[in-house]
Image (cartoon, rainbow, N blue to C red; front, side, top):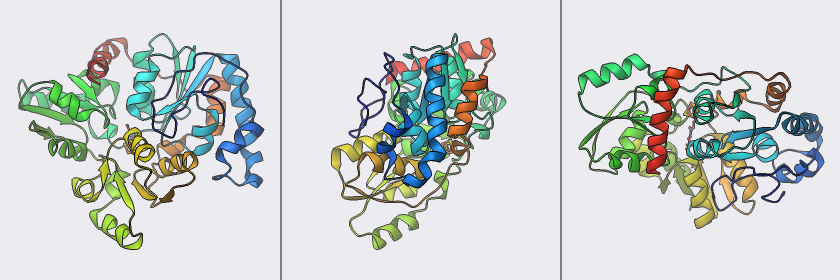
Length: 346
Ligand code: 13P
Ligand code: SF4
């Protein structure tokens, strides 16, 4: 495994991603294989190696960094990314990036957030169609209507939304800071959009009344409370971690609920012998590589949007400088304020 100075990564104890500060020689694919050898058979490695070496060279030529969400596949997450993390870490670390070009290996709203925090940098997403069912569930017009229906009630907006929706909001949140953001407002009621389940899960933790929207994550809504009970029967002693985008009934059956970074921190801290992560498949794959002694049970719900990103299209993004993420400056100015207000809270 490379040293922290070679590449910035979260460690197995769940620390936040580190910004890439200097540019020593990039490791070659043959040296990187050790990081993923438990997930990718040696016979398959040549399929990845050429793209990895090309990406390493292109990153130096373009003075580019790759920011990758925890749901990216191991060859992206462990081999070509410079900064990895949950939505909150990516938003925060995007501000510290010392590069001309950011390639966002994740979904469109994450690339927009990186652009909001880096208006002068070129932000690329390898596939423009990498969307999100939550982001698609609400429009700026919907937010204006909600405000008209609930005059004076502040709007807390999950980062899984378009910049245009963020621009209509008072403050953003992620699953890693939602409760703190809601409580920081010091009001008895807030509107929380667009994830109905996240809103209900936060409402269960706070005295603040929450008016939800009807958005759902198409990946996390598939997990049921019956699944959790079945897992406990089939795998005695299994520790269940559920993402807060899961239904409240699922969260209630779990041993722990938190963002992907909070799950990673829990695993580093508690070291459960056998565990299951009720979230996107690659999260377990990536964490299992960092924690080979733990037994990960892996019921698998793939996010089709996250899975649009591949080594091939990351390479193409850097070769052709495609696809550039742009935001109308008038929208960006207001959306940035919502993200900045969140980052001031936590
Ligand atoms: P976090 O990594 O912030 O927990 O978000 C999960 C998710 O579904 C992002 O799309
Ligand atoms: Fe959106 Fe859910 Fe996919 Fe995350 S996992 S990008 S919330 S659809």
